[in-house]
Length: 68
Image (cartoon, rainbow, N blue to C red; front, side, top):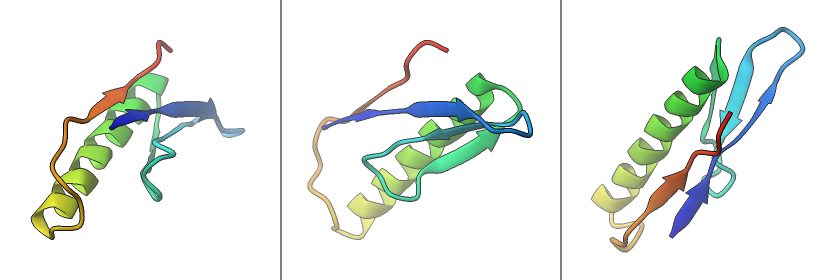
């Protein structure tokens, strides 16, 4: 399964990144790279939790981080 990361800049200057395929996986950062790194780390935690609780079948996953 492949995941994508999306990002946008908020009015206050912060960056918001999210992984739309995983509800609730979004993170803020001072830079686009920081926000995307935090979202990727959170996505990996969510996937690990799902596996630990038998909520998902193990399968190859990748998270595509588009160039900023």
